[in-house]
Image (cartoon, rainbow, N blue to C red):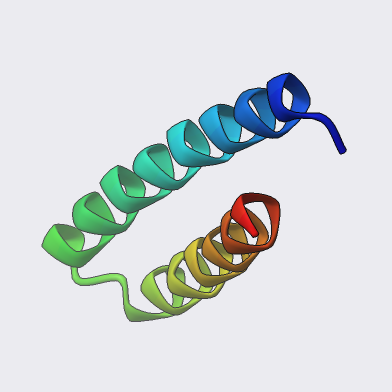
Length: 55
């Protein structure tokens, strides 16, 4: 994969991860534990995808 595409994908995934972390912070404040678990799993999946793009 060429560098511009990797850079674009990593930028998109980074933004998505940041948004997911904000959602998680709101869910933590609301005390919604099931939603927190789902958001944590989603954030982990995004993080793994980001790491695979960076490699």
